[in-house]
Image (cartoon, rainbow, N blue to C red; front, side, top):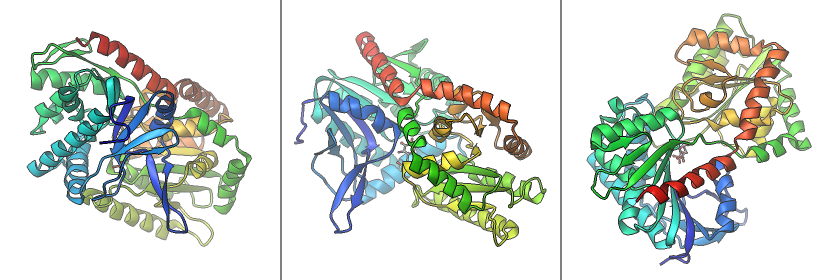
Length: 473
Ligand code: G6P
């Protein structure tokens, strides 16, 4: 069926292929590797071994043949427009996403969405099973594909199967709401190793397996209750970024100059604050804006002295809760700017776009303070990128306690974004942080990030997977 059929010894399966489609001025289209830690970490592994990446190419109702790009075999999995609605926008992003993020938005439960989720997960598993060589390693990514490990195991018991959950995993008290909770857990237990971002997520998963499957859980090992005696291991592997790439960009003269130009273009404010998020209700953008607006109102900051740049990249725009959030954010920023802007200065420079990594690094270099106020976030790689870019050990990171990154970046100024007064005083503290304290904090955070890049993360995971599959039985 596929060009790579049956010969790949290492396969990554994720909902999206790590490529963006680009259209040239002459109308012809091609592919460009998407920015992102996962592909950077895995591309070398892919090209060293006979690797393949199985995923959706982003266009509904289009079937593409497998192709080769920059040393990787890519195996596109089609999705109809209806499946995008039911499986991707529906079950993945309107059931599991809110359920796993502290039910910040109410999750919806629909049987038609669940049916589509099962069907599409089957298709991904079939594509991986076809491509895999005997005894191959298959690494399945994220909540869109919880059932793939079990479906794969059923077809191909010879495979070594890993799963990594990029987002939080909820406690049993919340997971309990899911009508298909047993099937989801059983789907995951098809893997030899399941990785989570935080120890807490791991503990939540183990408690769910014990409570809802009556599985035998010893330490971090779960014995599959289906009678075959197989063992699945669950462990935390906090993901990171491509540190070398960010550092290289942060040292490039044209990017340093671009950062200076950003400051000039904003009218040389004393302080530039920065927020960078997908426009998602989990990111606490409205909490940040509320705190910032009140600080302007209180006269604690002024538009002459400080500007907040808020980059909000468009995301899941057909999902109702995202549409509502956009309206709310647009409205809040409009009100703040209407009230506080002068002819020369703006309170919030709002950029509803995605930017290439070069521009992101220029923004990190320009920003004196990064604001990460997520209400719940599996990791938050923006915080780690900011730290990696700050070569001079300057700058302040305001970081929500509810991110995975807070476990590692202990020298950040930690905040509870629900506490608006606490958030306001922490923002003021970050703006006025004494240089020696800022340097001490940044140096310690940089040590952590520079020492734990995404290559180390994938290496740790794959090594543990090899061990776990030896013991799985
Ligand atoms: C999060 C998820 C990823 C997802 C990304 C973008 O980081 O963990 O699995 O790909 O958001 O969301 P999208 O729905 O555009 O793929």
